[in-house]
Length: 151
Image 1 (cartoon, helix red, strand yellow):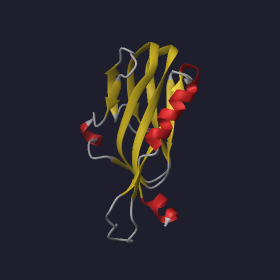
Image 2 (spheres, rainbow, N blue to C red):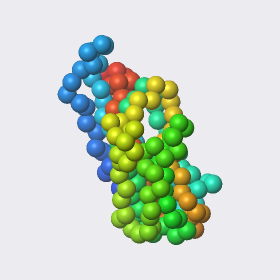
Image 3 (cartoon, rainbow, N blue to C red):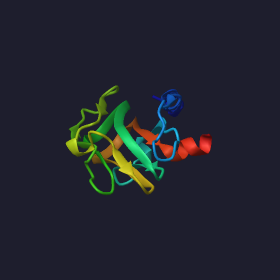
Image 4 (cartoon, helix red, strand yellow):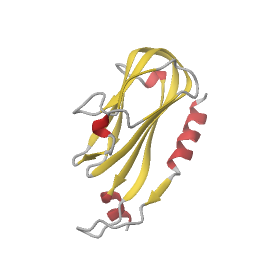
């Protein structure tokens, strides 16, 4: 898969933007739900890790990983954050084949999402060193800050 094809796929995922239809009882703001997507190719993997930046004051609802070009040299993937390196996905074995898909919740602690009061990252750690391949990491977010700025 070429970088243009990966970018096109990210654009399609990113087009999924949906405002929830309820208001926060404290401040009356609508939450805003959307996906943050991070495409990568094997040359982007530094120290076998990828970070997806999160805004402050958001709830991460779900995390996913999809392989778009066969990964070579990778045996497992963990997805977490600064508090728990494998809080979202713990040692998911990967064959590295195109279309292979991992989705949360994996860890019971994060099954109902997780609130991030300060800016943070979702960290994707690969076991092994990738010598080829590409994929997409997706993070589904519910944010009150974005909704306030948009309104």
